[in-house]
Length: 196
Length: 443
Image 1 (cartoon, rainbow over the protein chains, first blue to last red):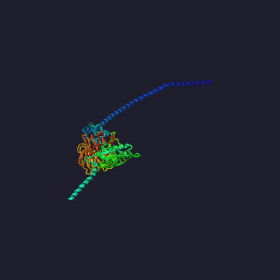
Image 2: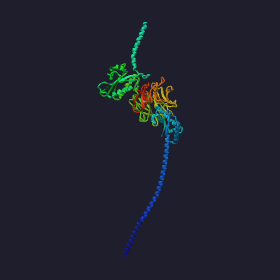
Image 3: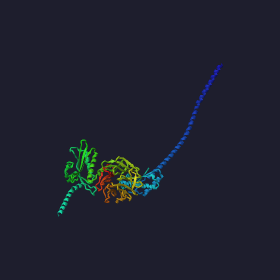
Image 4: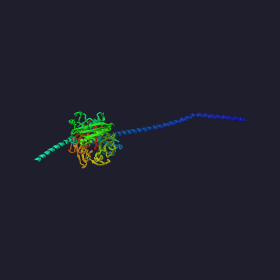
């Protein structure tokens, strides 16, 4: 009998254990939605954090872009000013036939050039002397030199370093206007300026 | 009395004998041309059609070139008047090309002074043989006779040139016109390069190819080299071309400007450079280093040129405000002004014999060539345009004068003489041609 009771009690205990074990597993299944919710909550928090960073980054980017635009605008402005200066530096001066004398208006042009050159140390200037076709080749080569030199010496007088200036005479070889009349000749008797 | 009569008789006989003896002398001298005289006479020349040694032989095309070249070459000589076939009495063709075969009488009656004959034959191996002769009609005498073997067609022009050189020497005592070489500047595609050709325009050859501006060619007196200025993008350079190895040497000099090189007969190069900020004339040593300043003042000093003796140098200076011609005595260092008229006198060249200075003067009608006689101190205008006549250059004979002119609309090189004879175009090929320079050393 005892052994029957023992077997009965063992069986009951087993059932209880089974029941206990089965009951715990059920609870685990039920706890799953809670875990998922936590994960979602965590993800949302990260999302919130990333948006802030993005906004900051965007702001930074915009600031950088603005700075870049500003810099570009400034550079464009500088470039424009430089282009205007270079254009001014390239302005021609003209001479009378068989003359290398600077006229008063050309002295003003050269003063402006000198002012630009003083402000722009990076610019060197090549001064070209040209003549019209009426003279003879060799004399025109010499006259072209004198025209270029007249401009060169005046610029030096105005404070431009001679190291930044070069001269070359092309004589009658490079006319601006190929026609054979007074108007063309007047255009061709010139000092021309090349920015290096 | 008898003695007196005898003396008088001897004087008369002697005079007659001398007069008789003078006749052939006068006839001989009539054929000599004084090209340096005040106005030389013209000789009537007839160039007879070339004769084949065998009448059955077909005429090769080279014979046409032979005829053309002879006629063209003689056309350059202002003291020769070429007669047309119609001017000659009798048949156009000759019965032969040697003195024995020619009926000189009909040429004499036609007032022909000079007769040129040519004969030819083609050998079996294809080689062409030609014989050229020049006869003085009145004396029935052969002045020049030459035979040439032509294996290549280009030799034909050279053969004719040699014959013409010999004939010119017989007539005038000089032959450099047919033995010299001209250097000049040719403009193509906006660039200027140095070329050479014969004074008749044959054998054009390009010397430089910088695709820049090569100006002012000048020969060394022995013909061994040629110098010019190269105007590059940023600087001027002196260029020396060796005729021996045909190599070009670049020389940099102090200053920014290199203008108008010219060789002294002793071999030194003179040149205008702005060493101290003003174009002055310097002499260079053998290595083209600066030797010494030759002409220096506040104005522009350029374009030196020398006579063959090397004692006189002509140049341009603006020391009086405008460009004028000056003469420097290299021994005494005295400078003499040559041009007084006009306000723009440039491009001087002194004749190798040292007597004449040619230069161009700007007149209201354009530049004209002036020849100044240092012996008489007189000057005369030897060209009359139209357009501009510039860059006069004396030939080695001090007789011919080459110059550049745009009388046809484009600059070309023409030939004149110191007497101002009718000008002749020198065919230099396509492109404008300027700045002629004769090689003083004749071949």
